[in-house]
Image (cartoon, rainbow, N blue to C red):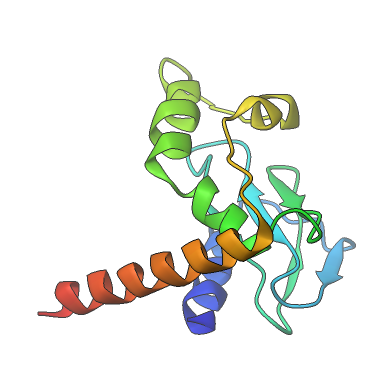
Length: 139
């Protein structure tokens, strides 16, 4: 599972045109999410994997959920959900040569906040479904 996130971060970082070399982060794995906030990659995001080092450019934001209230993995699932991607992020890119997402817009998105135990259970179920979907793609 973590290999997928490492690859997503690598692909995300290769897609960025300019990276501020002086802003290199090394966080505890799974404690932050990187999110493209501007340009054709707007809305792409990934969980920072254990040991992963990365740089933040001006077109990327780092989100550090309060783990006493929301699990980063659960928050990532929500960011990647059709409700957020199709209903809230995609409309920002229509009719714009350079779509962008700011923190104010992100705060207005309809995220759900179940208890931590429910988030863990939902996360397990979503991960299992993703594994099945990957298996089907390989057929």
